[in-house]
Amino acid sequence: MMHAMLTIRRNGANPMPMTKTLLPLAALLGVTTGGCVQVQAPDKPIEINLNVNIKQEVVLSLKKDAADLITTNPELFPQ
Amino acid sequence: MTRRTKIISALGAGMVLVAGAVAGVAYAQAGGLVSAAMSDGSIGEQADGYLGFRTTPSSALRAEVDAINIKRREAYTRLAAQRGVTVKDVAATVGCETLTGRVAQGRAYLLPDGVWRVKAAAPIALPGYCAT
Image 1 (cartoon, rainbow over the protein chains, first blue to last red):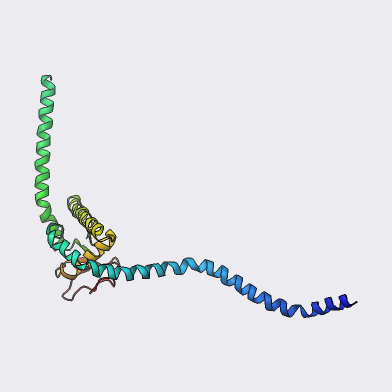
Image 2 (cartoon, rainbow over the protein chains, first blue to last red; image 1 turned 30 degrees about the vertical axis):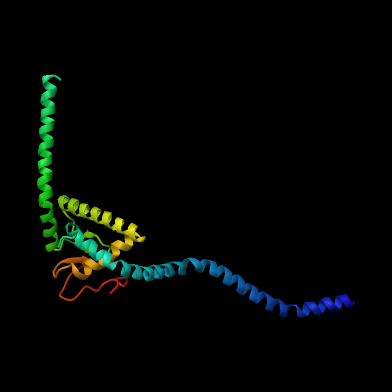
């Protein structure tokens, strides 16, 4: 009887913790699966941004070399 | 060697000479072709560091511009190897330089947006990565 009572009580009490544990679980699932899908989308813009940042530095460091290349190869840069 | 083969080989040698002479003339004229095409805006400097066609070129003009671009890439590749950067980095930097100072007013140029424009009096609005 005690057992039956307990199980009944548990059954009665179960819906509360169930939803409490299930909700975060579902949210976690959503976040993880959502995260997996999203990884590909933000990956590209981030990469491009990095490239642009690096490029700006590289371009700055190459500026003089590029100018020299043009002046030493005038036949390649007709005007 | 029979007489016939001698004639054939002589003819062949003659043709090679003529072909060489024609190529020489074509080469001599090519510089003028490129300059003329730049002046009338049918070709122009691109932000990527190479010359490009704004309009469909003649085969002679295309050949000459392609030859220049191949030599440019060669020079870019050498510099890239020296500096430990990519050929694209060098080419883009050269593109920044040509757009800054080597496009005269009235000449065509191409920005990364793929739109050909004609240089006005104002400086060209350079791509963001161009160091100023």
